[in-house]
Image 1: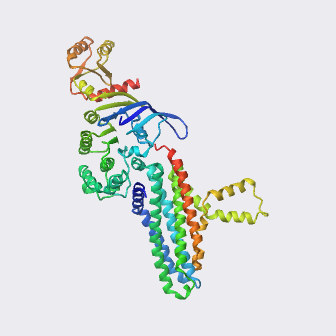
Image 2: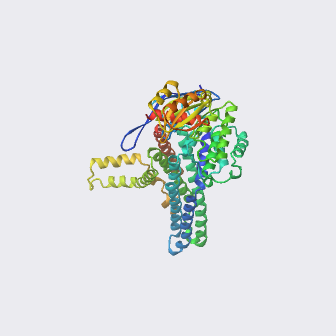
Image 3: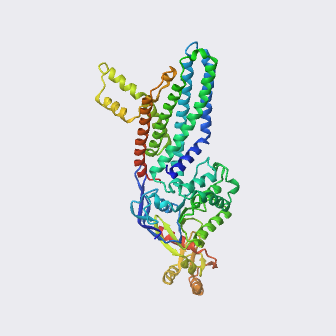
Length: 270
Length: 306
């Protein structure tokens, strides 16, 4: 990889990993996982499902918090406080700058996911040792596959942050649009399915139908990354499915970065 | 030409009212290799805008810019350029060594040269003892010093500095002057803007005075030295005859709030004093300790505003 882009990715990663926000998020996720150790015992059945669900949710929550706070902040600080002048005074093209920042943010998400997965593995292992009878259907591989799928979603969301940072001039708007994309991305598939199944009962205007249709194609379908339930039931996920959602993440992120690059190349850094 | 700006104009449009604000108008400048060029001008004159256009951060509405023979939009044009923005801001959680390593690596400096160059610059900037501290704990002056090191770590051929003395103590200012003089000695080119006129006067081969977006005057060092042969007469008021004589003899005259300053060559001193006596104006001071660039700067600004 281009040494220049890599050097930018590394300083973005270092800047993020040393931010106290990350410690706060890590601590919060740790607390939820610790809580699962205590709370799981209150359930009288399907303990493994509760444990897996809580732990993967904690990883998702920690990762999302990191993107909404740290990733948005790292991008906006560059533009608001003009750190970008120092970076772009080096022989970076605007596209290389965006790729470097994106890789830095992805590295940051990867580090966070690794850390949270390690803690979560220990938590699940502790509960499993405590209640071995409830973990007969449990499969470690499914848990790691679900975590991997969450990481793929974080890749897409980091690309969304980069995109909105280039089209807006305010970090608040970037945050707002990223959260909106997450919410819509999680629900759009369900909405479309609901509309299709209830087509005869619900009379939607053509405009609403058009908006839903366009949204379906523009907004990333983030529900494909939610494999918590399968992992909780110990159902393995096919490698072809994992490959397809990996390709989906990479292609969607690449397209978003391409659009971001087109917009950012025209933007004046006053 | 190492660096050339030709007929460049730039207008900004405000966000809501869509009002147009002229930042730079018909700006032309050429700088040769090894030349040190300083731009001075009041706040809002458009100095930083010129530097930002040169670095490719903003595009001119019209005109052409060439940096080392390339367009500013071409990343390769910045390969051998060092830039310090006004009030630089860096990544808070990095230390100075990491920042400079990034600067060197991003500029394509050979890895084996990086550490020795970082150590040399940090020592020169008196940041050696703070090199492993995070930048968020640095004072404004220390950040400025780190910024200067950031711009110079890869030993660029051209250095563009926006207010390099800002926030620096006298020792820091001295360091910047020495660094620029060292660049000159090594045949490097520098373009910078500053408000410290005495330093600009001392360092620069040429100085441009910018007012209201236009480059009003470009002074050679020799012209400034000629001006140093002048004497300054401060009188309490101006008369039409005094003004006419000044214009006729090419003496500088400008009115300030409480007094009027006349600048004339040393050999015309007795003639000027006689005229003042005849016009019955009160002579407050006569001296030759004038800050030449300052006087020319003030005069140019006043002329532009008139």
